[in-house]
Amino acid sequence: MKLLITGGAGFIGSAVIRHIIDNTNHSVINVDKLTYAGNLESLESIKNNARYAFEQVDICDASEIKRVFNEYQPDIIMHLAAESHVDRSIDSPGEFIQTNIVGTYVLLEEARDYWSSLKGDKKDGFRFHHVSTDEVYGDLEGTDDLFTEETSYAPSSPYSAAKASSDHLVRAWQRTFKFPTLITNCSNNYGPYQFPEKLIPLIILNALEGKDLPIYGNGKQIRDWLYVDDHARALLHVALTGEIGETYNIGGHNELQNIEVVKTVCSILDELVPSKLDGIDQYEQLITYVGDRAGHDVRYAIDATKIDKELGWTPDETFATGIRKTVQWYLDNNIWCDRVKDGSYQGERLGEIEL
Figure (cartoon, rainbow, N blue to C red):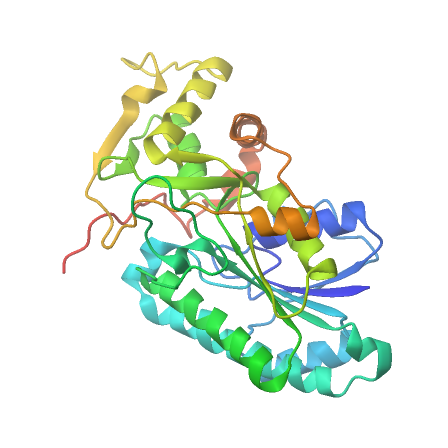
């Protein structure tokens, strides 16, 4: 089986590729533009594997996408390429419209054209798996509601609006053209190789450098945390066994306030690398509250019952086990962190913007 994965040099995409190469006999074609968040060092362990190929291609480039499809003849497309950082979408929404909406449209059209040319079992078995986010659902009120696959879309940020738009395109291509698609919507991912603009790696690296640990607003925003390797397993399982036309929510069953996440990271760091900073006995002392993000959703929470009952997937990691593995990985991989932060990213959190 040949799987073409867009965005395979990103955080989640690289985890999916490592999982496939390390645990299956399938082949992978990695299509990635290599923007600031794409890092081939995340694939160092499998880069020379005979079942792996890399193509530096922008998904908005129709002719190059067509060439890749024709050259590699994939059986499954897993579409993960996207601009994904909410703060950046507030600052530069146009890039998110281009990649997440236009890019998905180009990919859908080239994939549909390629699929139309296939014959027999190759055509019957073809699948286009679109990977999305729980942020398309918007904000949950109260503490009991959960996002299901039937929840109406109500995106709050340019990022989530662009992802919602791409989801709608995928469903429209399935409905109108009978194009064989699947969609997954996941909760917040964390784990090794995550770009350090995201909360957990930012907190780890800032703490080790004695920098402020910035928390938006009051820090009580709630997210469901999903360990990236669990997500990678789920994505491959859906791509191979999910029912065409269906959507599956993927969650970690770990609802926590942002401030709880940060304090947990600090506690683990206190244990593993006690502070040698002047006047700082515990890393928690570095916590700083900053102006809240514009349009900041208060709570996301996934109901992952469907993927459990219909496909038999559940996460292996609790937050306690996953976060400890994550902190330890960043402590053990200073070289990777330093290279990621060599100038393209300086650890900023954009915070409150002028409206």
